[in-house]
Image 1 (cartoon, rainbow, N blue to C red):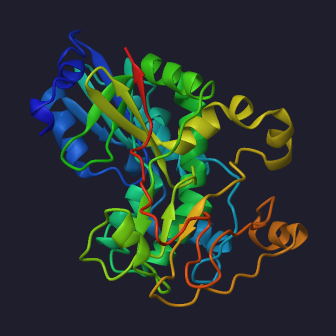
Image 2: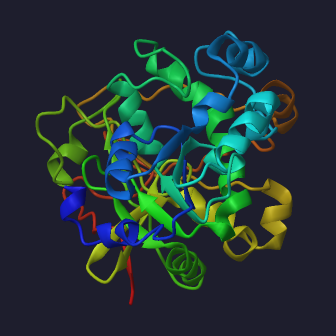
Length: 357
């Protein structure tokens, strides 16, 4: 449990002054357990939840409708910012409340719009973890769509929520005092902002890999299950995402504490250093390569994919580049994006952990 974690000392030592504001900004999808634990440790006199400054559900849906479309999975990229969905009148009211005397806690998505905080903590969460929580029934931000089609929840996040949240995170990134890893439920961990920013800078100067994940699918086969030490109870495994920063994460080890962060933090914080100026100018704030490992062995046929021209994808979806694929595999039975023999055991090494003292 978090209370047994030595990183608890960071929060216990905050706000010894009589009047103090602790701001805890969050990525959409962070569990309420984080709020409860911080409140228990910090013991605020006054609490402000940032979701109250956003427009209500119906108004948010009205504003987002042109970008969500009627398609089940395809929307249009929203290029605005988070404060487009914040009610200015409510924001001003809550900004005034944040000056309340005593120990104040401002918590939630976009909390730093209300108050920058005497200390600013950011609760981070990788997109793959968010998708798993959607499958368990978690709704989108300020919605009650617990039972909605998971793909529609992901669409709302991919085209709008994650876009505005990443922009907001980068706007405050240099000012974050502590990053809180909330990926593992029941075991949040905290690291100083300076330490994590230093780690991200060092990552671009050396080889690294992302944390892979495996998932079933309609064409899924049995080869990965047998050869990659995966859960035998799953019906199949269709793919492994092993180089997709939009969905994968990174591990960093600080002393004996392992921190997991979204790989997009590296992409967005070290854009030019990671991509190079030429690629950055061409693709923008995106990592333009995806590495997928696909398995159809003893499974079904792969889906038929038709990728649009750049002009079409820009006009219809607001995206600036299309997907061009290079597929490698054995034509007989195994269809993967890596060339391997089905008679050899594939060893998936543990994700690279960058050690920083």
